[in-house]
Length: 201
Ligand SMILES: [Fe+2]
Ligand SMILES: [Fe+2]
Image 1: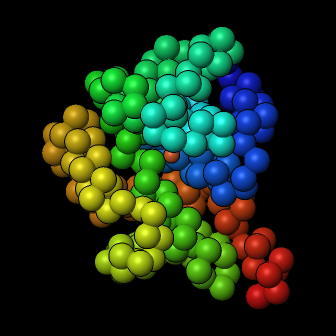
Image 2 (image 1 turned 135 degrees about the vertical axis):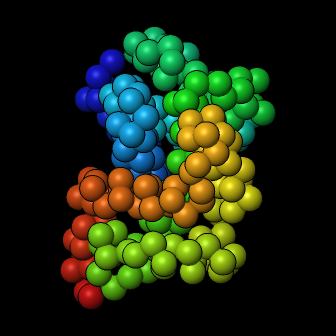
């Protein structure tokens, strides 16, 4: 399975632009960390890009991603990628994070939502204009991007830090990494300012 194959699975199964953007954001963050941690960039990217592909078909935590796994296997998704996707919902799949890729996916999942929301409230609608300090400020406003579970982000970041960084990755360093990764993918995320002209400013 290559990146085009994975994107085909996404376009076949995901209609909501917001969900596609979420997976593209997690893909960008995963590729960034794979490069940092000497992981396989393509495989880590696939885990990010595909991890929620079945959410519209199986929109409950009992079924997602468990019931989406057979299709991934059938389409040739590498086993380590399948595992990382299973481990992003251990309660539903019974599969716990073990490999660095598994921990990275959990740590990158929710936090991208905060970055996306912070970009979309800016008049420019450009993620490249979002400074880390605005992420920090938004973090404390619990009603902002309220769906982003701050405690889960803290937990997942601490676990990732322990597994892959000798406990040396603190939350805001992680946020900075994710932000930079997403800034590098601004066009793919439709967060490169194009939406500012669409909405008239
Ligand atoms: Fe998910
Ligand atoms: Fe997700």
